[in-house]
Every structure is written in structure tokens, then in C-alpha cells.
Image 1: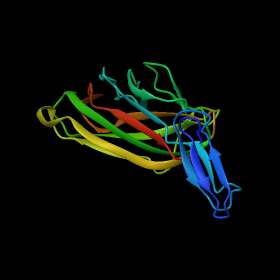
Image 2: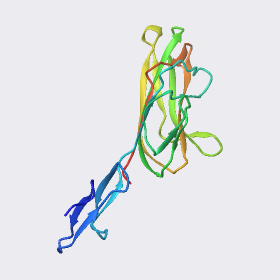
Image 3: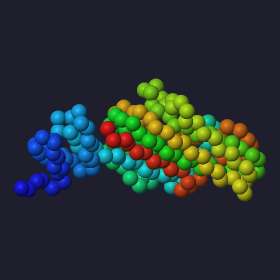
Image 4: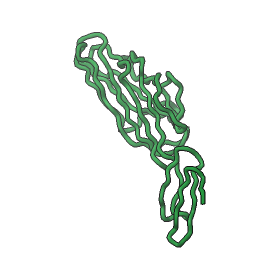
Length: 191
């Protein structure tokens, strides 16, 4: 007996055999005794990964969104235009997000602090997702580059959009994002 490539053959314990064939690439088999066949094909994790290759974002006059100008990985769960700060979710689900933000003193020699956060478009503009604030301490011009991270699990609906924003909150030095040093990685959970 032959089965289609990539199929799973399951037995129900009563002498019956079921063949489950995935309908798209990237699916994984999930076992669930409550299902008629005891299992189903579902989408595996989907990824988005990008970084800010250019840097130099002026963050001294309030929040500024980081533009992601180099994308390493993008799957069908996400939409993004190169050089835009906006990342859109195409499927409703739970997502794990990891962000590193690096700011640097480009002039001045005073201690300064910057703040970053994840924001979501509410239809009336981008507003902070609660619990995503992080702070970065920049010491002086020779020890200015510092990195902070944001990590979390979030629920998004299809069509939701996010961006990462950063600003200087205190100090006298001029701060910018550092080239090749801010990145974002998003992973969808199996639904």
C-alpha cells in the first residue's frame, strides 16, 4: 500500500487506519484524542526577523519609530515593507516577540537615558502595549552604546500592526540608535 508523500498513517486501536495528508508545507501533526481521527495537521511556527542596518535615528525630541531596513526572515503570518517601522500580523494568534534596542551617545559627554517600547496601532494611532517599557543608560561618549531588550508573549488579531519606538528621556548628550545593533524577532505559536 502506498500513501502520498508527507502523509501520516494513524491507527485508532480498533483496527482502523487513517491517512492524514498535509495541505500545505510547514504543517505539523498535532495529536488530540478528542478529534475523530486522533490528530490533525496544523501550521507550525512562523517567523519574522529584521534589524536596523542603518541606525542614526534621532531620538532626542520624543518617541521615534525604528525602521527595519534589513529583513532576514518573513513568512505569511506577517507583512512588512523594507525601511518601514510597521510590522503587520496577517493571522490571529499568540506571538513571542524579542527586541534589542541599542542607543549611542553621538555628541556630548553627559550621562543620558533612553526609553523604548512596543506600540500597537489602535486605529487612532500607535499606543504603548502595557508592560513593554525598557530603559537604556548611556554613560558617556566613550562608553555610550548600550542595549536593552523587550521580551513577551502577546495576542494579536489579523490586521494588527506594531512598531518599536525609542526616545531620550533624560541627560544632556545627543543620542541615536546604533547601526546594525537593533533587532526584532517574532515567532507565532502553533494554533
